[in-house]
Amino acid sequence: MSFHFFGNGLLNIESKGIAAPALILAVSSVASRSLGILRDWLLAQRFGAGPDLDVYYAAFRAPDFVYNLLVFGGITVAFLPLFSDYFQKSKDEAWRFAANLLNIFSFFLILAGIAGFVFAPALAAVVAPGFSPAQLEQTAALMRVMFLSPIIFGAASVFSGILQYFKRFLAYGLAAPLYNLGIIAGIVFLAPAMGIMGVAAGVIAGALAYLLVQIAPAIKSGFVWRPIFDFKDPALARAVALILPRMAGIAANQINLIAPVVIASSLTAGSIAVFNLANNIFSLPAGIIGVSYATAAFALFSKYAAEGRAADLAQKFSQTMRQVGFFTVPAAILIFLIRDPLVRFLYQRGEFTAEAASLTAAALG
Image (cartoon, rainbow, N blue to C red):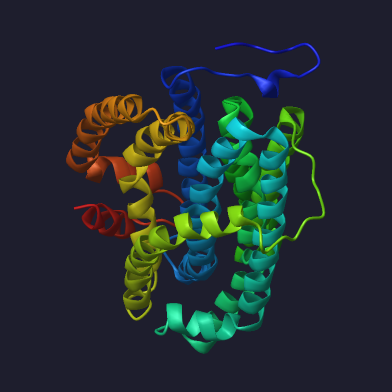
């Protein structure tokens, strides 16, 4: 790990290999997940497992679908391997590709956001058909606000890819904790006056913080924005070729997350909240360990692929998978074994009742 303080700043720390970046990202992920637990604790305490929290989680589903399909399954997958390939050949072409991809994907995400804003009532009815008319209206209102987040995250994903390529993981690692801090600020400062809409505003504030913390380090790395909209760029065709196979799997996974919300919307109030809170606990090992290793390794994997180092790629992939499994499997088993006391410790206070805690623990297994 090499540190560049003079003229570059602390956010431009560079890391080499996988272990050091994985450690930075693991610490960042622990911080983010800890803030996520605090966020869920505050949500549960203020709103309980009731209609407001159901509306909040239901409103997330459509914007999250767009984010996962176009950003997580799109830009994130395509950018780093192609940027790495272009950077090996021509730095100018790599930066041109980055600006072009940023502009074109932002354009399509803005179109998706406008469509989401216009059709929010219909989307709310699809996601939560069991809601009352008042709940559907509230869901649509929150959804319209939250459709700003995929646009912001789409732009941020390009800067994230740049930081990963240059192994500047500190700034990248700060982004996720700042996102959760934005939501927490919405719960603490805005929700008392604005209700659940204040939490939605916090989501957008957190997304903006996620973007802004990465811009300066990306510029320090060499990024310069250009007003390019080159739809005939061969790199764009290569990006689409990488994205399309991934989209099918992402879409299927998102449908698996939407389906329980559709069903739970017709059940007792609080069912959607219980499902989401349980799912957040369930995803802790993968989120802290798996994502940290995968993010740290992806930049190195892309570099090996661009350089044609197939043997190194296979060896490092195998090593990374073993390390991830070594930590995640015991963690998942532990969460299953202590699910009842864990849920009660995390959530059972304020408006979140003992019955809601029991239902959340049951949802974990």
